[in-house]
Image (cartoon, rainbow, N blue to C red):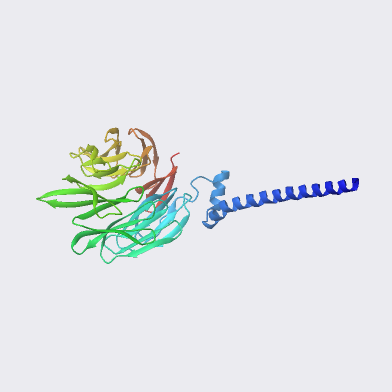
Length: 386
């Protein structure tokens, strides 16, 4: 009996050792899988060395910058998540936050425009016929229209809206899903100046411009994509609407040359801020609700007046900066103002909180995460705003 117990104890000990051994092997494999999942994509994108230096404090946080602009003319610089996108006159370039090129798409469009939503980038040919959508790694959508394109928009879930010329109409709007299947088409009796999707991708809002009796009208027309009947139409006389964007609370913000207005789901104007006696030169309207407006001082063209308006149409901040031109962005907590060769940071009340000298005169700016990217005629620079 003692011998049997000894054998059973031996077998039990051996069994426990096997279990412990398997647990150790499983833990090691799990660790390797996690490490591989993090490092392999970084290595593929060519950023592993930069990432390691950043984590261990080797080198500076501006490793990889400035990024030298590719040949050709730079058209626009935009945020794409934590990365940034450069639209050139012949190609689109996607860079990560370390300045590593992730993707390059040749478009060959004569007058390219760009829209960014989620992890997708839309490029379209104004006055041409083509549109393309790509991610940070590949092209996912391509379409050629028979008539010329006026403007286009991209939704968070990958829908593409394109306004084109059309026989019998002033314009025609076509909406396709992310797989290039047509979802919506409607003819319009007025010229289209802007498009924007609602955050859920179920509505499309169109800005139009027309004239009647010598007076100019801008209109806001919103459709659900499951009906050709407009949800509402709101008209503004003697106003040129420049932009429409949905706020986080679902309201629609429109910015015009003489006013900024906020519309509810029925198209009623629930807030309005007027500036018809001043010259608007640029603006920023983001989902956080605030609108940043920049005017030229009538007494001195170099003085740029900055006004910050909240989602209720109330003036909450004012500031000013001296410059020949002004390029702005707003990340919801600060206003970023590129004035010639100086990047200035204002809080949401308009007070100057910091400024950084840029080597050359800037011609583009975008905020992404804790960084601001400044484009000059030759390079893209990165600055921390944390």
